[in-house]
Length: 405
Image (cartoon, rainbow, N blue to C red; front, top):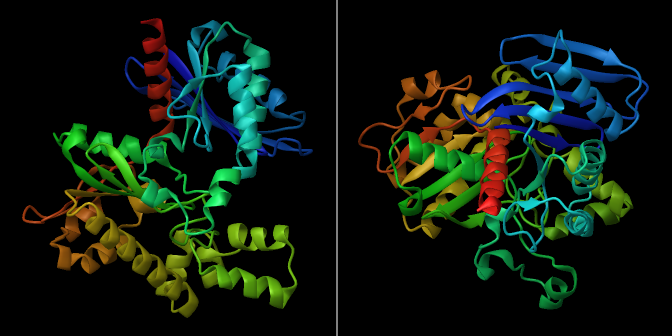
């Protein structure tokens, strides 16, 4: 069974075609700068055929999907001979609100519901809708399509976790609460760790750290997410590439008052100009900031000290919530590759009985997975590369199988 996974952004459309019998990527790629005069397209197939080109006629998501379809079928660059070889499509959707407890087969009602949650995810859900509508229009009803939500893994968070300490009426009127994000990734790497290292997912206490340009931490107790760092939107939690993470609300009020900023202006500052970029003044790319810190840039060094400090805080707190974690997982671009951050965080966690194997830690990069803690570590520490596309494909397949039953 072949499943096409789509991740629609406001000006991009990323995809991956996966053979579910072998969990093998057949092709993956992206179309960028949709709606601009010049569009960028990139694709690579399982046998290493790669194409990168500039295109000039991709005005919207429908045109982008048409081009992706064309390249998947191309004699030179393609991987399938007919679009009918695709058995289903799985769409990543960031926000499913309180309504979607799991994946859902896409219908008009489901699309309307996703639209309802646009105020809760104004940067993501509108793009998801565009991608879904384009795909539905071009494929019709012949190929089933499924929406997989980042938020659904957190549907069973306890009320004491997801309710904010503001007038309760705002939760009742506007559904303002903690939703959590990166759920697909956290669920995937946790299950993957348990499968590879022979653990029972439903009898394991896990702290999962998804660290990248967007970062979040999740506490999982016996297969159920009980706490997570992101909140109403992906802006909450620890500092990220360009996002501030959680702040004293007075910080925002003071900046708005002193700078006379509008809602849109302060929203842009918090989402696009803060975090590692804002503190370092150099870049949101962790690698560039790390090199600058080594070279003596004090603000770059401070940015990384803050990141490690905040990670330590969250992991320590979540260890308490779990009453003693069994495992810590690092994933995401930074979590998988920046061994130096893992080493510093684990050094800070020695009081919890964490003992890292420095040599193993430094070797476990570049998509390698493995245990990086010593045998006598009280809490085992793992690096598990995430694969959200495979996770989305898996949830799509499982839902369709259950419906057929």
